[in-house]
Image 1 (cartoon, helix red, strand yellow):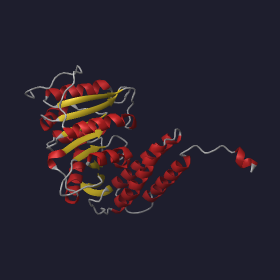
Image 2 (cartoon, helix red, strand yellow; image 1 turned 135 degrees about the horizontal axis):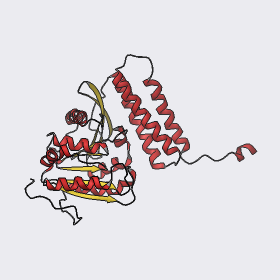
Image 3 (cartoon, rainbow, N blue to C red; image 1 turned 60 degrees about the vertical axis):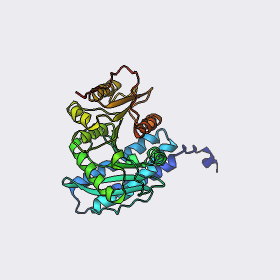
Image 4 (cartoon, rainbow, N blue to C red; image 1 turned 45 degrees about the vertical axis):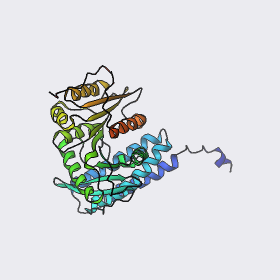
Length: 321
């Protein structure tokens, strides 16, 4: 009894994180069992599990109940994705409200994707579709696992699609996105007139490339802590001309930086895109500190807000040239 009383109390959330870690460690063991598996598939599976274990270690130092709950939901999704990838068996897709997992052929290999169907979904009244591309080192499951994005999709009656793929290769991400969109279109009808593209970090430049390569039409763009590459400026401008782009960045983001996003705003406005700039004070390169502003930008995008504030970043060109 005395020894028990003397032992330090566990940090809140520690047990839950330990449980999540065990779930991912089990997936790691399964991914490395002797079997005939394509090396590309095995590498992708191992990388996504390693990313999750790294996140668990980071939060173990500063437990956060919300983040822990997101990690538990991430484990739920990965426990469906990993076996599907290892077996090459695509799960059946449907339009039931909630989180779904799919596998599609993109290029010469399989890629996973996830989507969220909002509550009260009605195929007779197709809702908007937001395609959100993941950042570097972030599996696409991390988008749909977050309560924030689920709640945002529910509140706005939006289908959220998170395609998998290599975010270092914009062409590969475009192929994965196209395949994932075609797959869910058969199961979850959405409104083609209210189709939006976006992403986080590396996913932003991949999403711009998606628009630039003629994968439209898109009714708007949501860029979270990412930039427009010069080579995609003209194409993205053509794809979004007359529409809105809603670009969010933290003032303390040292990975992307405010100057790079401000430059993207200027170039888009010169292409006749109604680019709005949202800067979050003291926020680093991370999603969680940007949540409230992402929600505002998301709502502005769905509402088609095109008013440009006097922010010193220039005006929208009338000609797009």
